[in-house]
Each structure stands twice: as structure tokens, then as C-alpha cells.
Length: 351
Image 1 (cartoon, helix red, strand yellow):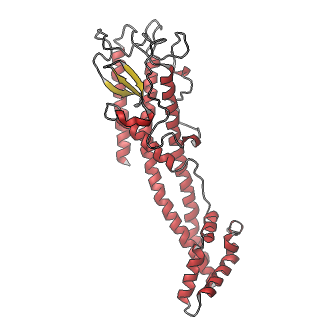
Image 2: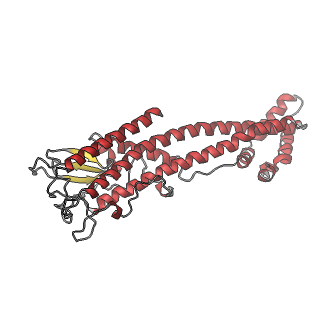
Image 3: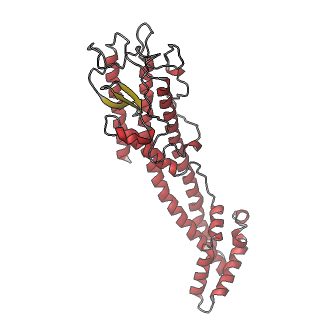
């Protein structure tokens, strides 16, 4: 857990360093002549960020729900044992002790699951947070990268005119800089299946119309000014790993969401692959976690016959003269008195 947190801190530090270097280089820019990005580029980034934010919300709900269920199971264990010790009826005592034992086992399993889910949640928060932060800083940089005349820009706002995005607040669907995410996670079932990100299409997003020659950030290999970025051939991924830059052939492509591994070896390509896997693990743990009450669990335990079998075994072990049929009748009678036939009245009698 410590290593995962340390890894997240290192990634954040490297992100800050990268932004600082780019901002320093941007201070040397004079002309806006490079290609910007199509509208679909920032829309895919924002959708990806939104989906990843939901993963953290889901993980939090999972652990909170599981912790509540654990408390529901663990709390009555000692109470049932205490009640059993004060009960004069031997068969009822055996029923209560058997239920206490089964609840204890269920609580122990939940405790183990809770540890696993917490570790999954921390890991997912670290890697998905890196991608979200990378997207946020990248879009912040590109919306701030206007030339002095405000005629330049790096993001196309869409349509057939020359409208460029001049403020991050106009990026429809992009929600950043918030500590509270309230969106539901019900639609995440297939978003990250198998370590994919279905929000990323793999399409070419280099603008050749609206922002075709108005960006101060991206330049082709033909640029000659020493103040320009990307003077040499370079192949890497940026914006949290969502955008591939290949300066060798002046391509700018969105990552292919169903094949993130193809650029994993490139600078910036590792974390988004891990983030997709971590998000998938959280989603597969359940998109609609619900709390289970002790009464509901007891009813389930009784209805599947586990309590009856435990009581029959205890009776026949303690009383050699009692046959299996008689022991079964006694077990059923004790269960019926305490919780109704087959546990059907458990909810009413539990309190």
C-alpha cells in the first residue's frame, strides 16, 4: 500500500516537471503556426476523465457497503453466544450457537474481501488519478496557449468556422478541479472490460481546418525556429496517455482504447494501461454494491440447510441413542420456534 502511494506521488512529481518544462518553452513562442487538435480529441479526453472519476466513487461505495455488512455480521456473533448460554432448551442453544458460528465465518470472509477491495481502490485511485490529472493539465495548457493577438489556439471548438477554444470553461462535458464526484457508476460495466478504455477511438485528431496553423505548441519537423517545440522526430503519448504524438510523420492520434498496449513501451504509455486494468478490477467487484443485514444473512443460512445439519450433527454426537430422523425433527422444531419454518420469520423475530 505504501509503495502504491509513493508511486502516485512520483507520478505527480514527474507530471509537474513536464508541465513546468513545457510552460518554459512556451514562453519562447512567438508565432502560432502549428496544428491544433480537433474537437473530438478533447471530447474523448473529457469523457475518459469522467468515466475514470466514477471508478473512484464506485470503489468508495464498495468499501463502505462492505464495511457496513461486516459490522452487521460481526456484532451479533457474541450476542448470540451470550443468549445461547442463558437458554435452558438445549436444541435452541445449539441453533443459536450454529448461527453464531456461521455469521462469524461470513464476517471473516468479508474482512478478507474488504482488505482486497481497499487495496484495489487505492491502486485504482493512484493510476486513474494520474490519467485524470494528465488530461486536466494538458487541456489547461492548450486552452491557455493563446498567442498575444488571441488569433491562435490549439483546440478546435467544432463546426466549419474558425472558432477556437479560448477558455477551459467552454470545454463542454469536462469537469475538473473538484474534490467531490457524485456521478453514478451504473454505466461502467463494459467501459474497461479486459483493460480497455472504450472512450478512446484511435482516430487521427490533428486539425487541418479551424486550428490547422494556429497552435503555438505543436510544430512539424519543418519548423526551423529554435524557440519551437518538437524540433526533432519524437514518438510518445501525452495527456495522461490518451493522445499519441508522432512527430516523425506529424501524426496526432487518440489512443486506441481496445489496444492500449500497442504504445505501452513509449514514453508516457505505461500508466494508462495499468489504469484501465485497475479500473476493470474495481468494476468487476460490482457496480451496484448493497448492504446485507444480519437477519437477511441468517435467513439465507437457515434456508440452505446449514444450520439444520450443524444441529443434527451436534445432537447425534452428544446423544448416542438419538437417531438421525429424531435429531432432524428436533432441529427443525427448534429453528421453527426461533425463526419460523425454514427461517421465513427471521426478519420479524431477529430483534
